[in-house]
Amino acid sequence: ETGVTQTPRHLVMGMTNKKSLKCEQHLGHNAMYWYKQSAKKPLELMFVYNFKEQTENNSVPSRFSPECPNSSHLFLHLHTLQPEDSALYLCASSPWGEEDTQYFGPGTRLTVL
Amino acid sequence: RKEVEQDPGPFNVPEGATVAFNCTYSNSASQSFFWYRQDCRKEPKLLMSVYSSGNEDGRFTAQLNRASQYISLLIRDSKLSDSATYLCAVNPIYGGSQGNLIFGKGTKLSVKP
Image (cartoon, rainbow over all chains, first blue to last red; front, top):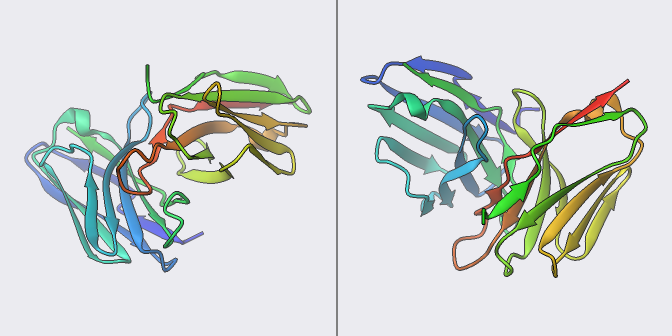
């Protein structure tokens, strides 16, 4: 299934590195989301974009910087991360009028050394 | 009280058994509820939506109890392939944007031969 794709699938970075996560959806959806999933914690919503406009920022530290150039692409730019930021970062999308029905990508497993 | 709570399990059941999970939510104004399934090292996938009293899809039945603020997921005639973590999600709709799902930590199910 290739509805929502994410690259890279795995990423190891040092605390001084700058990297970006990419998400692309091929479903014609208008809303896209970034979630963080850490071990033994629930999925945490980070950012919401609707028609390219950011509609939610869930008190995420500024070392995470999202970018949504169009309704099909979503990026998460990372810089000066901390080891506790190591987690699975999931992208999701949802169709117009059905924002609760979210389709997830496979995620990027991030390790910060 | 946490916004969405689930028994983490694991629930270990034999094939063919009937198993039920509960999920409690704290915001009484919540309107929509979801069960997602997440296989090990995979992304969550939507299993069922619950907007009114309940929903049924084959061996799976979801029920909503607004008075006691919980939703349940019943799996009948469980299969080995049902082994996964089941995530409960709630849209609180208390003034934020649509699509701001709050997830529980998940309940792990292991179906044994």
